[in-house]
Amino acid sequence: MHPAKFFSEIDFVTAGLGWGNYVNTDEVKERLTNIHPSQLITSRLKIPLFRIRFSYTTPRGNHREHEKYMFTSKHDECHMEAQMNFESWVEDYNREHPHRKMSNVNILDIEYISDARLSIE
Image 1 (cartoon, rainbow, N blue to C red):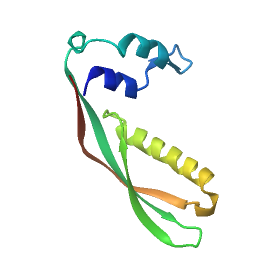
Image 2: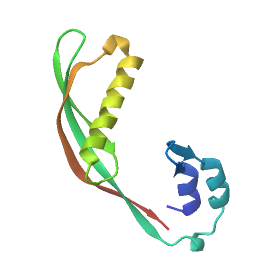
Image 3: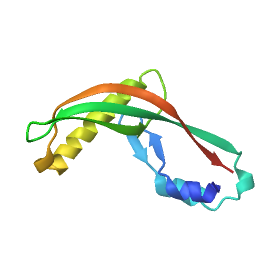
Image 4: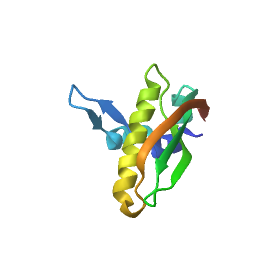
């Protein structure tokens, strides 16, 4: 992928000093979107992909099992991060779809699948 395309497609976040993160996308994009490819050291990004299998009960009382896939960083607490992101997704889904609300949601398994690779050249 060309660096200019890559930089135009992503957001930039800088860690704050105890107050969370500071989104500084516009500042960084302004600096980087027009760079020449020779100004960037060629690299490959690895983005771990996880599968989350879960069960839930429908509003009609039916039991269902499904799976979702999630990209997240791979580290010692990646399963906990995946669980927290999944729980946030369930809350958002239930708020946006009150007529299809999932209840008794249980994570059955969180499995590392593979690394997605993105080459920036």
